[in-house]
Length: 128
Image (cartoon, rainbow, N blue to C red; front, side, top):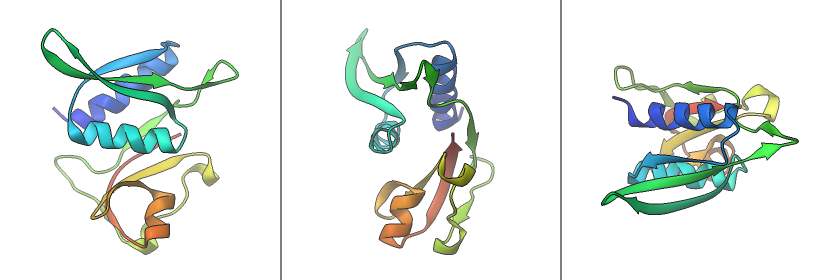
């Protein structure tokens, strides 16, 4: 099972159901992705908690005028096919209203940050 795709779908479904927050099994990569999404304004708060002796990641979702900020997600790089973007391949998503997230040598970065740092990497997903 693809844990990043599962994380994205849980966040999207939670947003559409107007949930205040969602709980996910904890992993370092999910935490790094959540921090990137927080920096870009797609989630409010992130916290690591323990439920039934298992670490979980609680992500508080963002709404703008009672509409969810995350309405659609698209996984780019999958376990069966890895997709890498060079610096020239990194473009805006939905004319700047979306977000591209990459796994780079400098960590998990948004497309905007990756262009600023002048690094490419594995394109994880787009969301808007």
